[in-house]
Image 1 (spheres, rainbow, N blue to C red):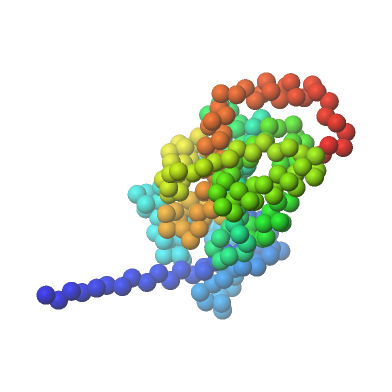
Image 2 (image 1 turned 120 degrees about the vertical axis):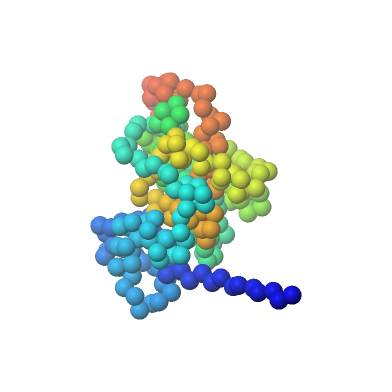
Length: 267
């Protein structure tokens, strides 16, 4: 019996997107840092390629990345965007640490804001910088939300390197006089199943997506075939903690805190 084997090759146009993709939009492409942006054909105009990407992201992945998005496989394709920013009382920062600048490995931060009882706004960013620099990014973000009078929690998995990073983060925060509210997670379910569990909430609009979270949108549109899923992983952890905090009345808590005097110079 003769057995015929077919080999299928995938030749995406974009080998890696810019390291700071979340800071780029269609209006600032010409002034943006394109470090890390690699094409299969380096003779092509990178600016024009990015314009195509921002013009129609879904078509871009189908036509240029050879990742046709079917409703069956692209489980996040029905995501809905934030149309108008709303006030919020609780924000959960989901953190997915990375060891460094390894190819395809992002240090992810998800900012999940609870704007209503069953409504959330999600912004997520990916970085390719050292862990020590990421601590600075996280603390600045934490302090920003504290200064706005918001309740802030951090969701992070605590195994191996992540636990070491969490301890170092707490140590650096204490130097600034800040005691972080950290929710430690011991993930016992496969990452793919955890990420899959987000789909119903994203598709029905319970979680609305920030339009400028380009890396997150890239992950959603190409999942489960995406080259990385770090931002989705961080988002799932943030949502898990936000849901476990659902019974707390954060509006009432903030009213009480706003009546108290914060020590001058704390932030």
